[in-house]
Length: 277
Ligand SMILES: Nc1ncnc2c1ncn2[C@@H]1O[C@H](COP(=O)(O)OP(=O)(O)OP(=O)(O)O)[C@@H](O)[C@H]1O
Ligand SMILES: [Mg+2]
Image (tube, rainbow, N blue to C red; front, side, top):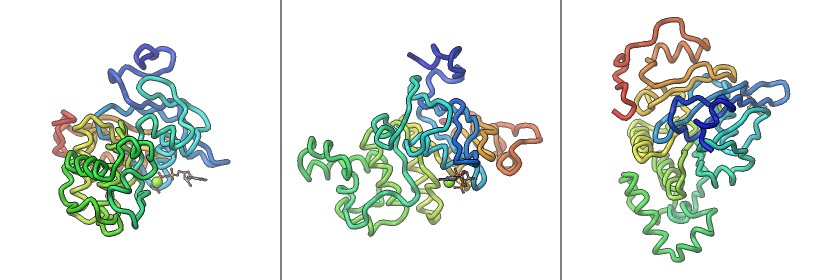
């Protein structure tokens, strides 16, 4: 069953041939707090979607619903056009959804190879030996153009924040993730580390992997994102190609929940209308 075939029944639009992930009517309440209200959003393959909004807007709640941490109160998630319920992080992992949190679930005392295979013993058994695991880990980092890590045998505790992000993303890619979700990937990073992580995010998009990046940093957003989605008090108030926004418009929507003026011309923030251009 495809999303297009389902369009009439589910309300999923035909805007893309094939959104990888769609949510419809997604709602999550914590008691009286409506963290998410009736959110509709499409995440296409191979594009980087920046999820923005003020503190408490519902960004983390939205990605936690997709990552199998929160069960939505109402609404439906579609994966590859099929309705799914993602009840645990394991179920998200099985679909190919990887979430990279700011404080990364990496073990400082283990080296890069051990971290990349940690928690996936089946995979490591199949690949058998340390040498093979080391080769796979190295090759994954090379494929992602991560060049600043000198040895995959160094403990993760000795890495910089940007390098740690790179290892966490490489782990996701090695597990064949189709959607990588990053919550504030550059918040704790310096200038060159931020550039390194943004390059990595672009590489993921170029490889056809969908990325959702939560960020409060609009410079980062305009540097890498193909699309923007804005949450305001739990509601999705705006979404579209990045060329439809400039910083001023984005700030206005983030802070007020709506935009007063006309959309900016496609070139006004230096971003091409071609999302891959
Ligand atoms: N476990 C929880 N229990 C109760 N309320 C919660 C819980 N998690 C989030 N909330 C509430 O839901 C709303 C959305 O929170 P969420 O963490 O999704 O915001 P956010 O957009 O990620 O904010 P930030 O930018 O500060 O990280 C907030 O009002 C928050 O207080
Ligand atoms: Mg958050």
